[in-house]
Image: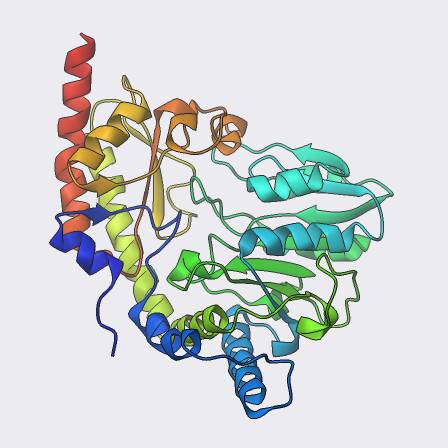
Length: 384
C-alpha cells in the first residue's frame, strides 16, 4: 500500500502547505489505485480483454464521480481538468446563440472563453457576491448561457447558485456552474440544483492532476469541443486518461461518504482560527478578512494586509517554511492582479489567501499564526 504523501513529506522538511485552493497533494488512496494502470495498457474502446478491463474501470469511476456530484453517471463527461470543462461548457452552449452573461469574479478560463462571444459582465458587492437581480437584468433576447461559480476561488464567497439557476430555467437560458473550488469541500447535488452544466477538477480535492469532469444535464444535446473520436459517448474525443480517471473515481468514492463532512468541519475549524486571530488583532494592525467570513467555502480565507505588500510577505513566509497564495500579479503567471479582487474594489497587491485541505494539520495553522505577525512586523520596520 502507498503510504507517503506530499503533506507528510513537507512536514518532514519543516514545510507547511497552505495553498490547497491552488492544488492539493494527490491522496495515497488515489495513487494506489492508479499505479497498476500506469504499468498496463488497455484502450477502453477495444473489444479485447485489456480494453474491456479499461472500460469497466472508467465506468466504475464515472459512477463514483457521479455519486459525489449528485449526477447520473451518463451525465458525467471526463475532461483533462476544470479549465477544459468550463471552456467546453461555453463552446457547447454558444451553438444556440451568441450572448453570454458572466459575473466579474468568475475564473479566467470562464471569462476568456466567454469573451470570444458577445459578453455582459455583472458586478459584485464588496464581499464578492453576485446579485441575482443584476444577473437577470443582464439577460438579452439572444442570451444562451449564464455562468455562476458555486464558491469563489480567491475569497471563498458562496454564490446564490440555486436562485440564479431557477430563474434562468424560467427564462429558458442555459446555466453553467463552475464548482471546481467547491467540489470536495461542500455538498453538491447537480440533479437537485437543476443546472445544465457543471465543471469540476480532480486535483483541487486531492485527486490526480490532468483530469476533471463536465456534467451535462440529461437530455441536453450540444456540440462537443473536441472532435475526432466517439469517446465519452461522442461528447469528448480523445483517448481516455484511464489512470487519472481511476484515481479521480477513488477520491470521489472516499468523499461520497462521511469523509466530506468530516474534512469540511476540520477545514472550517482551521480557517476559523485564522479569522479569530484577525479579529483579535494578532496578525498585524489593519489586517482584515476579505469576502464573506460566514457564507464561504470552509477551506479558504483571504486576508487584506495593511501597510505591506503581498510579495515580500509571501517571500518571508516561504523562507519560514510556508506556502500560501496572493492575488497580486507577482505571485502568479499573470501580468495583471486578480480581477476578482479588483471587481470587489480591493487592492490585490495587499492580499493573502490561506487554504487548507485533506493533508493539513493544526500544526500548519500554528506555524502560520506564529510566522505571519513576525514577517509583517519586520517589513513594517524596514519601511519606517
